[in-house]
Length: 188
Image (cartoon, rainbow, N blue to C red; front, top):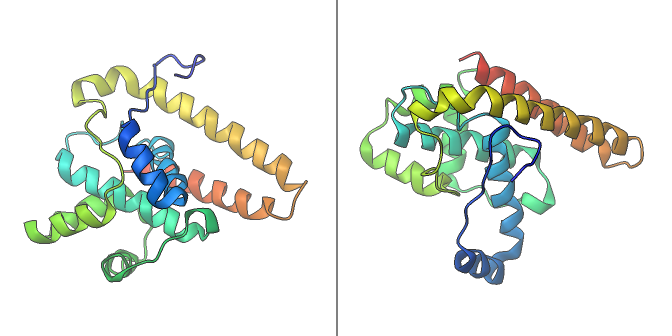
């Protein structure tokens, strides 16, 4: 819960699953948490519109995983398999920015078997608690403003820390990419 928010934000998780993941691969928790936070930063929960929810979820997961795979940080690094490589190459061939909206249109051309394969490859979190369309209008503006505020505060903090450490430049570059991606999503 974020007390300064107009809208209550909750992160639901299974403690049993969290413990299982921690025991098997503690480093994956960094990536999983970042995956969920990026959904919020990119406003995926609120900008789906009338798109089909299952396809929108896959598109959002691919967009977030693409971002994480391209920040090249040791704490979130994973092996990029053939399905991911093939998907990223197909998306990059367009030459435009990669957003959830663009990926959604890309997915509309796929067969059900391929959609299921992509869902399994890019799945990290369940979107079942994302606001339904009728809830979005009420929550969207407030939530977007709050995540924009968090993004600005994070960027200012990273810039401050960037002056204090060599790693700061990488963090600032990532923050700038995230901000640019958010703007791209809003254009759709």
